[in-house]
Length: 206
Length: 251
Image (tube, rainbow over all chains, first blue to last red; front, side, top):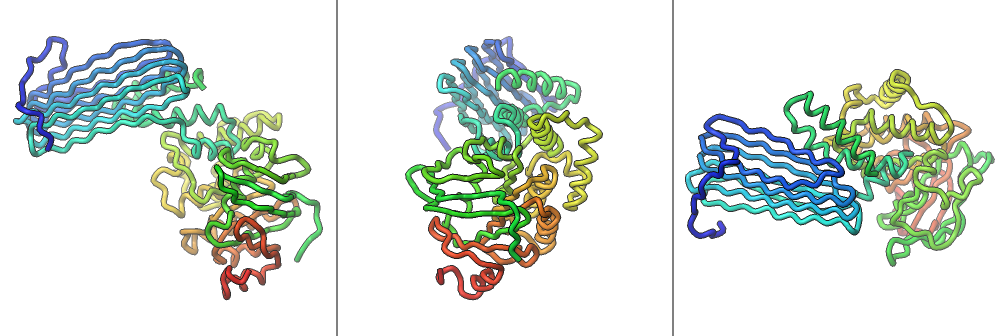
């Protein structure tokens, strides 16, 4: 295990989400084309068995600037957190993803997951992603991962070989890419709404 | 039995490479309507490159030669235009597309082609009728219509999905790239039935394989042996037995 030195318990800021024993926090962030946003979310899991599910998607085809700053503090035993963020960035847009998971010494049996995946559509687009794990407990399951890639050429060729034009193939690829985020939204009505808004936005990007 | 129908596909002096590596080193091949051709050869002979070049995979570069399909310059066409013209490739490794259902995928494909042909798009009910009919034909369970394309499919289910798509798109020339690899006998028969059903005087197929299994069910009219980027032998089905008995080293 990596040595982070001594664990220092920072005070809980006023704008933080504080999740107590047995409670679940579920949040979805959607950033659509044309929106530049600076999103900071701090979550404190302070009661045994508290859960947090955070998901987000950002579609930045032009010159948007989108920043995510996420902190997930595990401060009680048996808590679970799951974070999935996906972005498609084109034009000269910029996205920053800064995600930190801190597991306190008393937060045994923690499960904490975070992933951030990005597709770059142009040479001018840029993404910086920095997932961080700080673990001070020893009985935990944690993982984090980040990728920055491009639309898959094999997938695109498969679609085109079926007669799907290149622009439509790109639309389907982008819908496919964000589908995992959309599928995680628990409320059906909200899920369908987000899917429809995202698809409309993607059609404008291809 | 060699018919002398109209030429569907004509490949002349085809050289192709990927990156700096030349893989096809002068292919000549003529396929007439109504014919099934088998292309056999050892690993690395260029079989998959041939199918990739025929269907216009972007990473491959044709450096010499020509391909004419129904009188048109195939190499000047995009992959989607080749599909609209009646070409179909059953992939050796079908691609998984999470979040896109088979229904949505095929509806997009079928209607894109109809649009290119100046036809009206198929409406929901008409499309579903066609979809159900073709799924039944390849013995695919109806619930697959809602499944994400190839996600979580077994090897056999993926290949069956390829044949289903082939039936949906009703190609004039179908190319099956190692469609028989990894299939059990039941799945193999379904693939064979699919190919045999498309065996009409107007259509043709190319079966790329390095096994003879599928060729027991779909009997080829012409067999070619591809080795090191060249066709080194062409014959009738007896060539399949010769390969089975003596391998590719004899060529």
